[in-house]
Length: 151
Ligand code: HEC
Image (tube, rainbow, N blue to C red; front, side):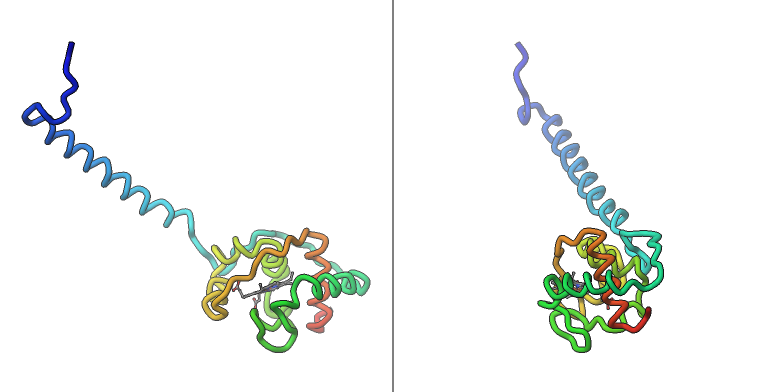
């Protein structure tokens, strides 16, 4: 029967040590390179795409106002900074896709949208997911449109 020889054959132990070291270095290298590739950021990244925002709808905005008062006021005021930035005027400053993406998927925006990445650095805290579905997000968007005067 052949003996299991890990270290007792001259030359062989050294060779397998080198092989193991080489393999370890290659794996470290690959792990270091690939997350860098997949985490590309952009100023235009949004999760929700191609929203079709129609004429201003007051009833929808009123629904959004009450959702806003439950899910957003802990961190946002209209005109002054709180935990997060003031939101009056936001619909003139940002696209509907950006705003609705931030309302529904803040984590992905914090990872990939350059504007949000910069805001996280300014506000030193991350907006948390409020479990808002798309209908509710669109209603909140309509409310933001209402207070921003961009009807
Ligand atoms: C836990 C606090 C918190 C809650 C709750 C919260 N936000 Fe935020 N929000 C933030 C912070 C902080 C930022 C700045 C970006 C970051 O750090 O994640 C932000 C950023 C934003 C932005 C981008 C602002 C800009 O100038 O581009 C929008 C839009 C927004 N929030 C809307 C909302 C809405 C609507 C709700 C309710 C559904 C909400 N947020 C709930 C903390 C919060």
